[in-house]
Image (cartoon, rainbow, N blue to C red; front, side, top):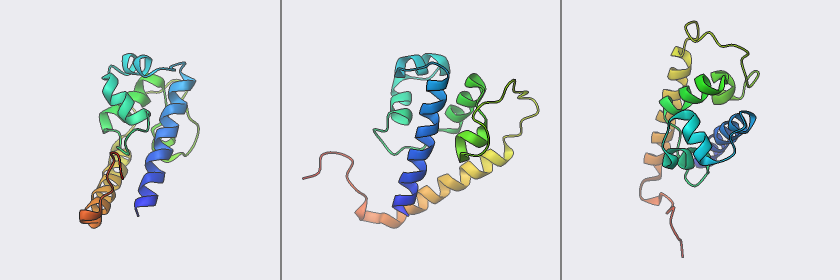
Amino acid sequence: MEGNLTQAVNSLRGRIQAACENAGLSTYQQIADALDESYASVRRYVGGFEDRIPSLPFIIKICERLSISPDWLLFGRGPMQHGEVDWARVSFRQVVIEYARRISMFADAVEAMGPNIPNQGNES
């Protein structure tokens, strides 16, 4: 399960990086400014320094501000970009449900690891 979670987080991170590169955003600060997010949040979610699942508001900002398909960003399905997105017609219901399911799976995996959770710091 841990390998699947890491793979899913890395796939999402890769799609976030591709979306930002496609928008001409090449530094964490440029991404932070475009998304109105903190540098630390961008570094955490985009940089790969932690296996952290981006927050739903972070995902929505990427989709809205970079005209990225939520289906592509979260699941790798369909085209990356929408031409002109009519956000009034986009239902995030299914996306939110799937996102919540994945967070629940992540929480279950962490709990199942119990005291065997790997140390993210320096290991000897």
